[in-house]
Length: 84
Image (cartoon, rainbow, N blue to C red; front, top):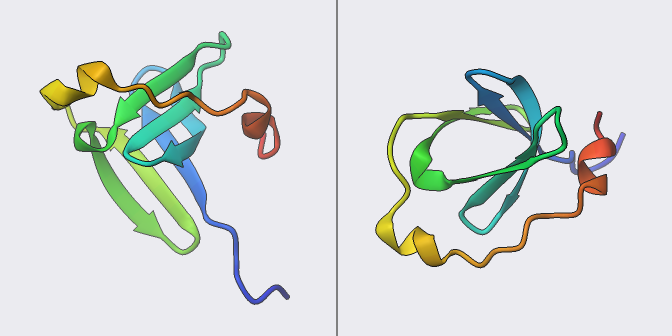
């Protein structure tokens, strides 16, 4: 048994269901079934923590105004296939 468990992230999208997610700084990324990378910010999400898992659900809030300049590059699509 490993000493540390890997944390997984999930986005509960209201139309697309539960999607594997990646978190980078304050950005949450998920891969939609059509191949589009979804990009949200932490202030747009409710968070539920479970053992070794973080679940994000949209809360209806708008991103902060300074997010319009967000230059975070989404992760490679291949990172999503590792858990699919």
